[in-house]
Image 1 (cartoon, rainbow, N blue to C red):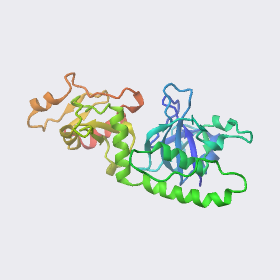
Image 2 (cartoon, helix red, strand yellow; image 1 turned 90 degrees about the vertical axis):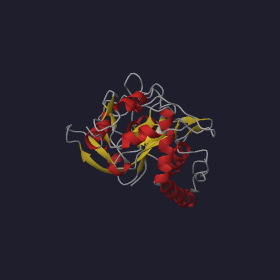
Image 3 (cartoon, one colour; image 1 turned 30 degrees about the vertical axis):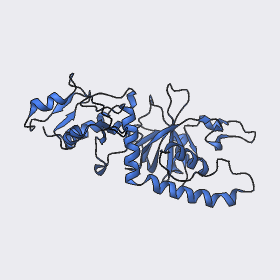
Image 4 (cartoon, rainbow, N blue to C red; image 1 turned 180 degrees about the horizontal axis):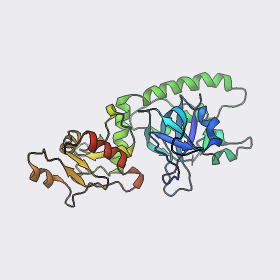
Length: 299
């Protein structure tokens, strides 16, 4: 087992669904197999417009031949492990590249940076995740930024892995994941309810809007922005109980079981459609919307 970096573009030509599967050609098979049972970091290249850099983590459950595409493989993501970063991490900052394992003996970026799948040092994993999940409230102590020096590796490794065990335990907490999911979803929607268009801020500066999972966590719904909606309390209540839903083009659907159709429709955006995030990749994914219509919405 080992940590890894999977490159994923928002305009990828591959059959990727980051919270569920990662498609790749056979030349990367050995590298991906070494990540089975361990965690990977998703990275979007710098040449992509409005790149997210390092933007999420997930755990690889297994690798299988792609049943729909001969010669291709799928890395299947462990359900419930995917998590968008609260703060996407850039490739480099004031102190240089974040992924120190990409530096060659001369301190320059090596050709490994171009690989779609590559191994990730434990210290780099810890650094990237620490930056990506940093919140205003204290998290876990970060390990030193220094890349392990020759001759010190055996003394550093136990400390690094102890920190990583604590980090993974932290990100596996449901309370932590809910808090980070809320932050990423509300940011995508500008803290505005997708159904009503309301943006209400209380006296403490906190947005009075919830981050709702389209496919619930208890039904294997992932913590990815495209499985989320920013909803006010009333809209959230109706959505969870299947009284409203969304079509793939985000038209608001109202159940025939609603006893006051006129009042409900008065709450909805005047055009009858839910507001969508600016970035296409953050829009509600049809796969999750279909699940809600089929398993939650009361026709």
